[in-house]
Length: 138
Image (cartoon, rainbow, N blue to C red; front, side, top):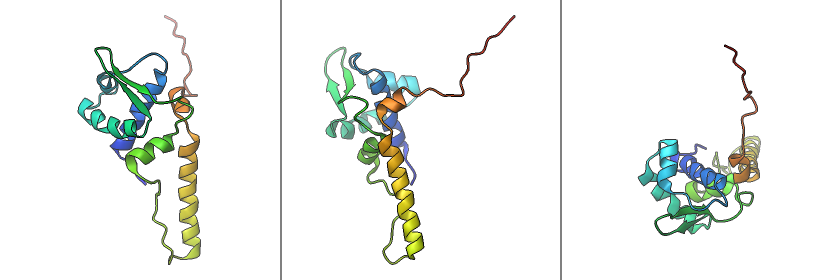
């Protein structure tokens, strides 16, 4: 399974909205500028996310988008399914050897488990554990 730019950029939008949860609307223009992405492309991705109830639009001069519910209620799997379709890295064929068929099912389930157990809150609050503060002396 390869997650396309639709899924990647959709996650980017949702993570940014999760980071700003409770602070008011965020414009797609600001997300596009922050991540050096096409605002036009983000506009195409926001519609299915809005239709799924993951984002709400706020009209007006200071409008933009807010996350549709709490960041701990939306998973990466929810977003990927809306933008990419069903999560299935390998098509499981009924006439395939049982051992291979079982392997494909286990891979599919593992991918689903990771995506469905990772919330937007997890992604928005992620910090790289390898980052350390360096002290420089001159």
